[in-house]
Image (tube, rainbow, N blue to C red; front, side, top):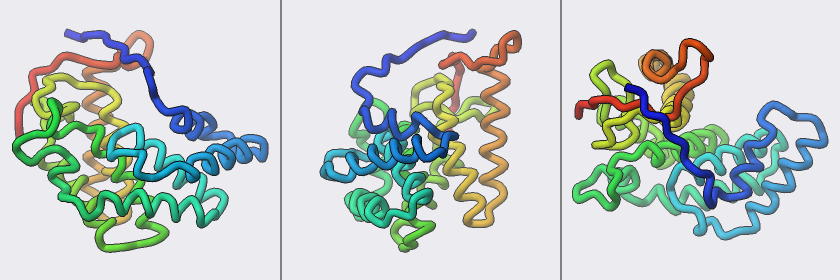
Length: 219
């Protein structure tokens, strides 16, 4: 049975929203907006942003505008933020090391920062960046909770499919799969889209419901 649910935006950071406001509009007007938001971001302490989904999306946006404008200061900031976490234990960052530090162990929101770090590693490769990305992709593929048909759960014990899990999982699986010449990761990203569509997509409208109840099994 499908359970409809809507999460409030709440206190989602203004900068995160603006960095995603014009994903396809690269005219000069929009480029100037992106740049002004990125300039505002890098004036804030990187320590302000934890290792979580919203911050990961934010840093992905920063790396995309850095790619577009070739602005080294944006990459410098991303590197400072990343180095706050690369020295930490990955199992702790992903909250998969007992005892869990939250009530959502293995939460998919902790996967998003690895996508941003993958972008960083492309332009400033370092072994510790690759290790974090590689470890996150490995956990998604082999350790995360799944439904009987293989759909990724939102966290260990959630027993639900949340459609935004796709955004946390598929970019890192597909992009790291390509970077590391591991087609099985790309195939896994495609598989997740297929399975989620079969469970969460309304055939009449083509729209996805946000959550779907599911009996999930541990790996």
